[in-house]
Length: 408
Image (cartoon, rainbow, N blue to C red):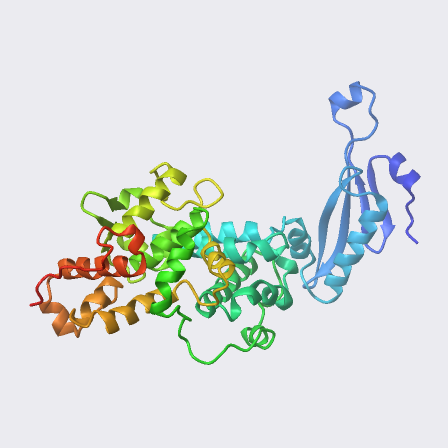
């Protein structure tokens, strides 16, 4: 038992009063103004005296009674004495306890604000949006010093097998946030071991290809979706199919990127995976979808906005449309659907045209050096034919007869 009691602490006069085991109550004399008002004592505070590296060290614990009561001071002193006996720095431990440890969501936002200074605009946006969409709903409210391997596994499980590429990025980004938290003193535990994370998650199927809707099934799928409610997610999925674009490019598309008169979607470099600007030629069906999207976005800002003001659609929104339609394939797989169709049905057009339509690099470095054209006329013919095939009801040339530019 300590020497002090609650009554003794309340009535303590100016001076230093020992409780034992290095804990002291320090009572200051009142100021002259306070004395004039009849006060006989000044402020009271707790001090712990310990040995560290061969010397004596006095560590302030907090004031009485605003910060710590007698029992709370004893509890805190006991914790810090344990550190001191182990040869550790009790003052550093006290300071660490003073830190306001953020939640994962708060730490993610702080990490993004600092780390993104050295990233491209696209990478910074992807880092933030992917974590907000897939991880924050799972562990966003947990303090970063409480996050364990099981929590990370829980956050990754939903996309681990269905979207392996995204899951890999999310794993890296979660560890980046936790590493940033350690560097700022919010977390002392080691980061979850990547091997333990893999062991705790389902085994992925062999092969890295994205499951794709067979091109012969694509027209029926599109027709079915056109007959349903025009939600932002459904329109975004249809536009993704009709342009053979990546879903991230569609979800980030702005009205200012679109030239309806020229029938083009001019995507800036920061929107593209390869970091090179790219123009998509728009067929009748894609333009029809844009006209419908105007009613939902007022023709300003994001073409396909998310639920929160100024926020992008989640990629899971597009996937949900697929799952509601009882399709197990991926949204990204429609790029393969388009490529298979072009190879089988449009053999008269060189393969590099469809590769360019997908914003892929084509040819060797030497060939690229000499090929100065982006083959836009041929790409327009190809994309017009794709629109007629996959969405004839939205295409002017409903008989699927298309006039092709000359090759060569």
